[in-house]
Structure formats: structure tokens, C-alpha cells
Length: 356
Image (tube, rainbow, N blue to C red; front, top):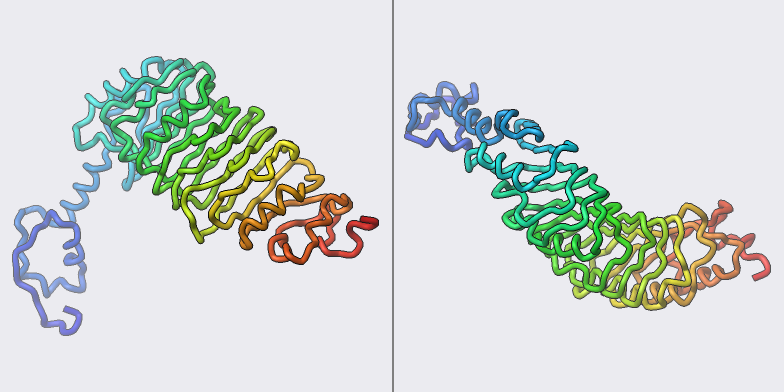
């Protein structure tokens, strides 16, 4: 049409297909008079109507105490109430209030204060892409089949401030999510990352784990997570132990994993010499601590650096402590560029490590 203003198209077409809406552009107004739609309603109106039906929120009274937000492109469901005691019953009622085509939401935010257990299939047949569960100090147990029916739709899952009695509860739940991409676990009474905590998640790129407890990381805790993992952050008030092969993985990769250990206190004596053995990929290890890390144990961190020439450490250290002088060895020169001295000097400044 743009090649010649007298060019025109004559045909019949489906006005249900929004890919044809471009034909309504004013610049083509004189060239589409021979195009007839298979319905009387105009394509622009129809496509707008379809979009509104798809993202329409249900009547507020039918989903209380939850509320629905419609942005036009997505729908989210939020349930914040101290009166929620029967989660399964609540979502069964919401399901009944919705047509089958409307039982898909982009996200769910569920805050619980009076629920001791989340049963199997608690969300009925309502599907979500993103689920966030938070806020119950009385919640002790989550059924492994809680998200049955959602396992093929959830790509982001977050759980926070749940007072679980068994560390495996949350791991088993996560392992039921087949297409998970982002996982956030925060303040869930987690004190041990168990061995083989997670099964393979082919799409999982991001893991964030925060514990308010003293935390031990067992060997092979993340071994099967998959080849897509690019970012892992573990935060704890006190990391007391990191076992052999804690960060070992099944897959051999060229892609870098950014591993952040964020802690008020890390027991350097509790880190095994082989804690980072078996990683099978380059790792950028970031150590964040409220107070200065006095030293990096050579037995642990030189083993880490020798494991892969692309491995690197990023942190702040005390450059007056002679236990850190090994970091100046030429063989590690390219792996310590992210290490800074708390006195403001470069690691290799001759004023550092005087008398060592």
C-alpha cells in the first residue's frame, strides 16, 4: 500500500484476529474499502473488548476478603486479612464466582495470620504465574501438594515469615514447581539447607534465601538446580557452617554464577576447605559482612580460586592482618580485583602487610 497510494486490497478476513487491527490506520483509509470482515462489529472495537474480558476483575463482593487489581494487561489477586482461616474454602468460593476462562491471574499475594497449615490444592483450580505467601507465625506445615494444579504455571515463588517446623516442607513445595524461574525464601525459620534440598529446575535463574536463624549449608544442597542458574544470594544473621561440596553442581557450564553470602557473622572455622569444590562453573563470590572480614582463610579460598581461573572473590578485608598476605601471590592477580582494603589502599600497596 505504501508503494503506491492507488494500491488497494480486496478480501474477506477474520476480525477476531487482532493482528489485522493495523488496517484501521488512517493512512490506509482509501485502500481498504474492499476488505470485508466476517462480523459486523469493527475490528478495533472487538479487539478492545476481547482484551477487557480477558483481564476483567470479578465482582468485589464475590472474592472477599481478597481484592483484585486490573492494570489492563494483567490481573493480580491480593488477600490480606487476619480473618482468613480456611484458605482452601476461600479459593473454592472464588473459583465458583469466576467463569472458567477467568481463573487465571498474573499474581497472588497471600498474607496469613491465623492459619496453622496449608493443605493440598489450597488454590482450587485458579492458576497464577507469581505467588507470594507471607506473614504467619502460627503456620507450621505446608502440604507438598499445596500448589498442585499450579505447578505448570508458576514462574515466580516467594515465601516469607512462615514459622515452619520442618525445613524440608519448603523445599518439597518448591520442587513441585516445574517451570520456576525465580525463588525467594525469607525468614521461614530455616536453620539448615539440607543435602539435595532441590531437584532440577531447568528454568531457574535466581535464588534468594534469607534466614534469621543460625544457618548451616549442607553438602550438595543445590547440586541439581540446573544449568540456568545465574544468581544466588544467601543472607543470614550467622552462617555457622558450609560443608564439603556445598556449592557443587551437576552441570558443567561456561556461564558465570554470582554467589553472594550476606551475613552479620560468618564462622570462618566452619567453612570446609572443599566448600566450593565441584562447582563446575566460574563463580563470582561476594562476601558481605556488617563488620570487616578479618581474613580469608588461605586453605579455603586459595582452593576456591585454583578450582577455576575465572573464579573471583569480592569483599573488604583488613590489610594489616598477615593472614591475608597470600592474596598478593601473582597466581591470583586476576581473581582478587574485587577485594578492597578497609584502610582505603589498594591490595598491593606496599604500606599494607607491613612486617608480614
